[in-house]
Image (cartoon, rainbow, N blue to C red; front, side, top):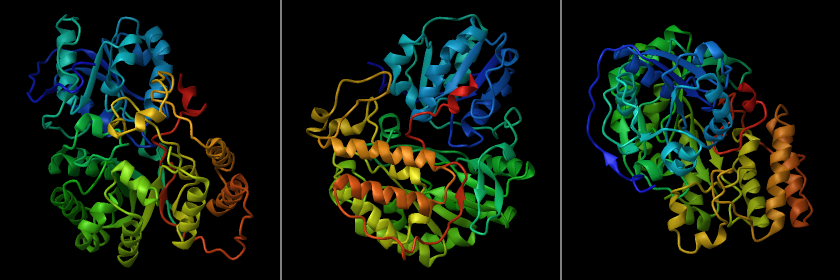
Amino acid sequence: MNDYFAVDWGETGTTDAPFKVVLINPYELGRQSFNLAAPAALLKATGCEVACLDLTLQKLEPDTLRDAGLVAIHLGMHTATRIAIAALPKIRELAPSAHLAMYGLYAPMNADLLRGLGVHTLLGGESEPALVALAERLRDGDISVQSTPMVRLAQVKFLPPDRSGLPKLTRYAHLNLPDGGNKVVGFAETTRGCKHLCRHCPVVPVYRGKFRTVQVDVVLADIEQQVVAGAQHISFGDPDFFNGPTHALRVLEAMHQRFPNLSFDATIKIQHLLDHAGLLPGLRDAGCLFITSAVESVDDAVLECLDKNHTRAGFERALDLCRANGIFLAPTFVPFNPWTTLTGYIDLLGELLRLKLVQAVPPVQLAIRLLVPQGSYLLQLPGFSDRLEAFDPTLLGYPWRHADPRVDALQQQVMTAAMQMENAPRSEVFRAIWQLAHDAAGLPAPTLERADFGETIAHLSEPWYCCAEPTDQQLQSF
């Protein structure tokens, strides 16, 4: 992977020759993918014939893949990459003469593995211009091996995303409201990358502390077409909505002026919520219902290892700020890591009870196990590599076993409970996990008979599940 960190800051040209491209999205948290719609618009503008397949809702159909000259698969997260690898044999069968490309965060991070599986081109970062250039090169008969850098970070000049080839919004994740109602959800991105260097984050090895914006007029055009298609709520998919707070506010002001009844949610770091607390009233007034924040842990030592730039006390202050402004906070966690202890896990559960956040946390969040992919900044942490086994291409990461086997056993038990009780009330699943944790530690479980699990918050019907293994149902697309 000698060219992994080579970065091309240049631009590419386009021509007007027809060429069939199939863009495939294996999984993206129940979203109607910007990362298919954005390149689709750019490719169509050059005269390409473009078909999109979303494997969360569609099958690998022979008619769609027939005569494809280029099949490009978006690898935005671990789950998507696992599904894509499993789908490759079927894709080759249906499009035997197509050039295979993969783009997105996990493409350059797994370059050696993916090339070994027969993928011809790998693109990361701001990859749309390189994807267009690849289609043009193939159309012109150039089938030479990839010579350009895998990672490109130059600002992309987007066109309004073309979502016409994707399933209807109503088939994707919807918003569940506290009163039992729901809303149709649209999905938009205003920035990509991140200016922070959290050690466990898969964005970091590719963007290395940089982020890039999507032009405000493009974001607004994308939101407008989704409102026309029925969207009543917009979920912003930025790794961090406040990487560029001025840019974010411009988007929100224009969106709220044009669509005053449209609500939204976004992902924002605890650090940013504290640093930009004065912006929260504006978010509320523009229609923000909830903010997702990757809290990861309530153990300050673990947070330091992950380089999260917040503390347990900071998390509680951010929660108070959100509540004071009438915005729900939906924390996410990586509760199982090499530093986890059974008492520490019980402490996390106790903190969710004390802060009345049980209803705000999908049970699967209490089962997530730390993944260590290729290029992870965790590998730079002194002594961390000693905890790892050799890279496992099947897992797309470095396996690790906890020094206390009871912790690994508990993680499996919690994941099983979360999956088997997927449709049960969150409070009921929490009770089961509470008992499992205390049993694992050999401690009596305090009664939860009078526990206050907190308010039921607005939340998306697809749980935040970006770093988990694919399910059997997700693999049925092919």
